[in-house]
Structure formats: C-alpha cells, structure tokens
Image 1 (cartoon, one colour):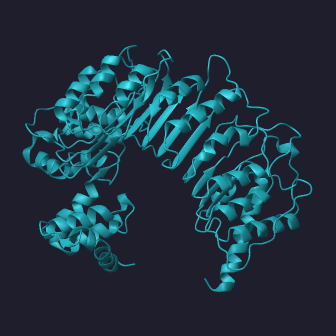
Image 2 (cartoon, one colour; image 1 turned 90 degrees about the horizontal axis):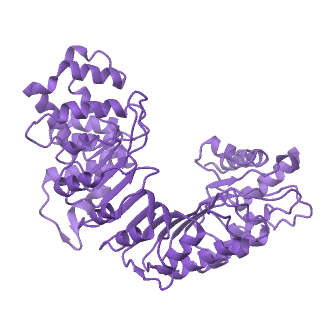
Length: 552
C-alpha cells in the first residue's frame, strides 16, 4: 500500500479519536494537535500502519507534517546513539553508523555541546523524546553512561529532555547518579537495573546495604508525578525505611522490586493508596501467623510474587484483593522440600484471597522442589478450577505432577472455557508411565472456542488403543493459530512414526484446527518435539494445498 493510501486509511481510522468525546465534538484541538495524535499513535514503534519510510515521505510532502512526524519518529529511543550523533562534527559523519565506543570518543573529543548552534540543534530533537532506554543487556551501556556524565551533567541551565516520560537506565556503579539529569516532572515510569557492569573494566561494586534514600529523595524532588517504579538491585534487600519512603509517592500505581522483601515491608507497599501493580521477586513471611492482620488492597490488579509455599500460604491468608486480574506465582525452594499437599493448600488459600470471577490470567511456576511424584494433575489444579473466567494460563516448571492423562485436559478445557492461551510445555513423568495422547487436542477444540495459543506436554501418538474422535462436523471452525507439543522426558521410549502415520496425524490436527500456524514462520513447527515437528510441518503443507485448491 502506498503512503498516500495509508495516510487516508489512517485519517479515517483515527478521526473519531481526535474529534469526538462522547457525542459532542471536541473543539480544543488545533490542526497541529490532530496531526500529532495521528502520527504518534500509528508510527511503526507502536505497531501502527505507518513505517519509518512512510513517516519520512509524509514530512517531505507537506511542511505542516514536518514537526508532528519528527515528534513521532523521535518519541521512542531504544538507544541514545542517534542523539549523540547530533554532536559529531559534520566532517566526521562519513558513514551512517559507527561503533558506540568510537562514537563516544568522537563526541567527547569534539565537545560540540559548547557550541551554541550545535547544542540548540541537539535540544530541538531531544525535546521530542518520551521514552529513553539504556538497558543492562546493552553492551554499550557504560559508554552511554560516560556521555551522560560528561555532556548532560554540564550546567546548561535547562532540562535536556523536557518531555521524557519513560526511562530505563542501568547504573555502572552504586554511586552512578548521572541519570538525575534525565529526571523531569513529566516522568511517569522509571526502571533502574543495578546488575553487574557489562564492561569488565568498570566493575559494579554494590555494598551489602546500598543507600537508595538519596535516589528516592531526588525522585520526589524532580519527578513528583512518578507512577511506576522498578528497581533491580539483585541479591540485596531493602531496609523498611526505604520501603516507607517509596510509599510516600502520591501518584504511585506500580512497584516492581526485584529483591527479597519480608512480609512487614510487603504490607507497607500493599497499603499504598491506588496501587495497581505489585511485583516482588522473593517474598518471606516474618510475622506471627496467628492472629494475622488483613492486607486489603482494593485497587490491586496485578501481582507477581515468588517464595516458598509456606510463606505464600501465609501471604494469601492475609491478602484481600477483590479486583485482581493478573497473577504470577512462583514457588521456589524451601529449607525442606515441600510436600505436595502444602502446594495445593497454598493454591486453595490464593483462590480464597481474590474474587474468582475477576482473575483473567494466571502464571504458576513450580520449580526447585523435588518432583511432585504420585499426585494427579487434577488434584493439583482442583482449587484453580473455581477461576472460571481465566483467559490465559501458564503452568511452568520441570517438576509439575507426573500423573496426567487425557481426562485431565478434558477437565481443564471444561473448567476454563474462555481460554485464549494455555501453556503447560513441561512435565515430569516416569519411565513406563501412561502419557496423554493426541485425543486431548479434541477437548480443547470442543470446549475452548476462543483458544488461539496452545502449548502442551508430550502427547504420545504411539500409545496403543487410541480412540480418535471423528472429524468435526461440516461448518465447524476453530481459530487456533499456535500449537506446540513439548518434548518427551525419555526420548528413547518414543517410537518414530512412519510416513502414513504422520500423514494421518497431520490430517487429524488440521481437521481440528484448520488455521494452525497460518501466518506463522516455519520455525514454529520446529519448536515442538521432533516427532510432532514432522506432523506439524506436514499439516502446514496440507493446509497450503487446501488453500490453493480453494483459491485463497
């Protein structure tokens, strides 16, 4: 589609967003405001219909489009390298790209920020930036930090990024505070990743009890409207006084602390008015369990918590979260391996702590325990079947229950009829034990009409006496796109299927899910166990032949 046609489609698609609020037209927006909304909400960074090339063409076609287009193109910066390029002397801009380390040296040697014309040009583009990322996995993060310390710490008498709303910064040391110059009153999301320095010449030496209080004080002064705070100190714990300081932000809606948090600190965070998201990488209970004071969180919609089943049970016994919609629970190693009934009791307590019909997505990771041998999957998940409105479910971990058959998947499909995505890619099972069969796929086809992504553990196509259901009746349709079948625990026990058996199984899968892997890359087929990869590759070929015969 050409750029003019894309632009016409864009205007028609978004006209109601910028001209109507309710039933009356909104007359406060100028033409410039309307163009800014259209381009910013539909550029390639937001998965819109306009690519970077389309945006450049729009800027060249009409002068009125120029600034709105530049605002859209510069609003998200995965790396500040493009900004540093503005401070490279023109006679040095020979190639369109150079390594960040060389770019850093050229900027520092030239000192173009002392030249008013060059600095004003830098500021003109910097004012468009709303999201800036210097992640910890970026090997060039130390070079970017060096430039920030040198260029932005110089007293320029004005904010360099006045529109910045989202910042992800990775300090190169515990004393690295050069990101202070990036803080603005408009900042809404801040992520600080205190992982070890990626440059071995700049080791990250974090003290056992780092002083984050000065950071919080600076945030309160420079970014009073902060709504989401994420700190990743890794292997460190915060003092309760620091947690209390975090709780003083008036507009805070989300807190993610990738560290160990005791229950007393968790209470402080849970009591933040208006808190909607609370993520803690490790939780431990340090209170008397009886009597247990209730933690009432009326606005909490998302929680991520990791801990042993005993601590999590105490947490859920105290927690009351009637609006919770998304939960990510990880049961980690305990001092003594947990018995399976403790895990089931923990899940039962969790269900009682929330409104069962409110929860929409659940991710459960059972890891680092001894394998849960001898417990059926039905008994393990029984407390969760009350969550009838779940649309996304993940059951992760190598030590999930080992007794699983087709009837368990039938129960899952019947209990969670509104599923859109279900994942249980791994399962521990013993040699010689019965395994589920491809018949399980038909249960999801029958009872979960909205399912679009399905990841199951190994389904044994070589099991004797498999009673395959008949093909679906004519006119029935299921829109499943993604199907992954996990590997078997003992590959030597799996018999290789012959050509005719692969053909029959591929036809069976295609009858159940006519659009399986439609539009997906071929590597989707290879994500399954080798035998099932052959089946799915054949199903793809059969679907392509079918579509060709139908004239699609």
